Image (cartoon, rainbow, N blue to C red; front, side, top):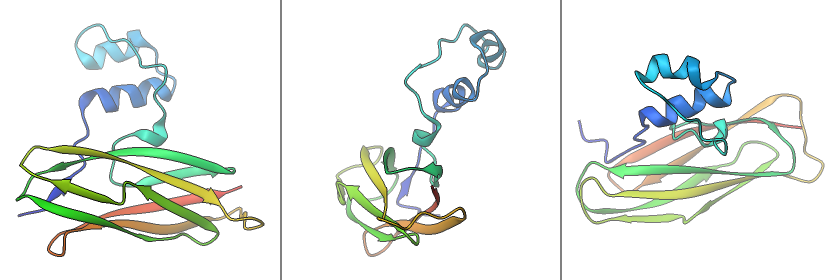
Amino acid sequence: MDPGLVYDTTIDDYLNSLCALGYNETQISVLSEGPYQCNKNFSLLNLNYPSITVPNLKGTVTVTRTLKNVGSPATYIAHVQHPNGVTISVKPNMLKFNHVGEEKSFKVKLKVKQGKTTNAYVFGKLIWSDGKHYVRSPIVVKAL
């Protein structure tokens, strides 16, 4: 198996997700096997997970993701299939990896198109490709 890139989610990512869901530090310390201090600035939207889900998009939101190279050196280009009524931009839209283990972060900006709000979920995707590998991330948005 040669995926090229992976979203390398850490234990801290998951523990911070529990904080964001309302679990307190005492409850989380049971899972972390020791004291744990929640990152108060963490947003579930930024969980370093392959999918991007924005359940209540009003206006514009920007999420951050990090990819790790697990293959040969390569340059990946972002390709977006926009959900209906939502514009998406990726910055940077090109990631160059020089060695195994190298990590690169990028931002995905989602914006509701003027007059295109919906009370239904709409779907799109982000694909990073070097021509050999295709790293797909589903995008799910409910634009309010």
